[in-house]
Length: 196
Picture 1 (cartoon, rainbow, N blue to C red):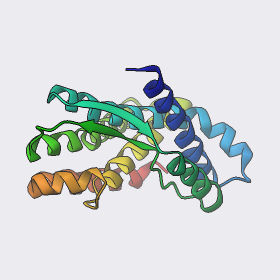
Picture 2 (picture 1 turned 180 degrees about the vertical axis):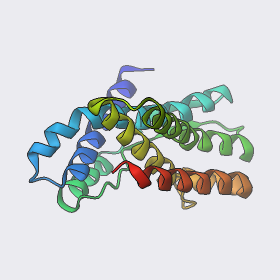
Picture 3 (picture 1 turned 90 degrees about the vertical axis):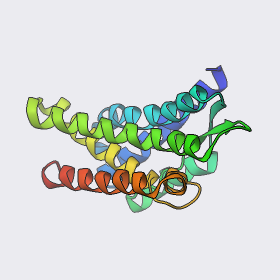
Picture 4 (picture 1 turned 90 degrees about the horizontal axis):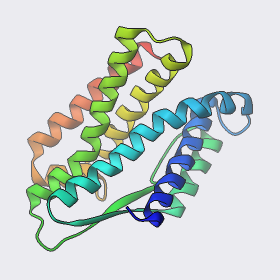
């Protein structure tokens, strides 16, 4: 991974962490909650965002493509403004760009599914850690927010509208898309029952 790509991933991670901390903390005027939540959200968002993008990248590379992450400055600004003013995270920090002439629809579907599937697995792991290990306050918040953020990222990315991952997964295999999308919604609902 080149320095430019690494730096853009870090900038994107920090920016969407700020957005999530403001959204969960009640907006731009709740600075106390923001500073309390920021370290928790950094861990929770870092796992969800970074592993999501790396999953796309390395599955694409596995299929012989060149892949690199590129941030979208306007998407990062929009994420922070929406979170600070409206308390809603609409995060479009960037994407992994894939360069190949030979990818089949199935391979493209696998690449697109890799990111949300990573979020689903992480959401399940955070949920299990929260439910079975009953971590103390700080770790408990990290696991709760980690589950919520990962299921949220998976659900959003699986919406079958271009350019989201869900559109490519649906085009490849609607059954696989349905299992992933509705499984993610069930996971999100399970998290929402007792964490917040």
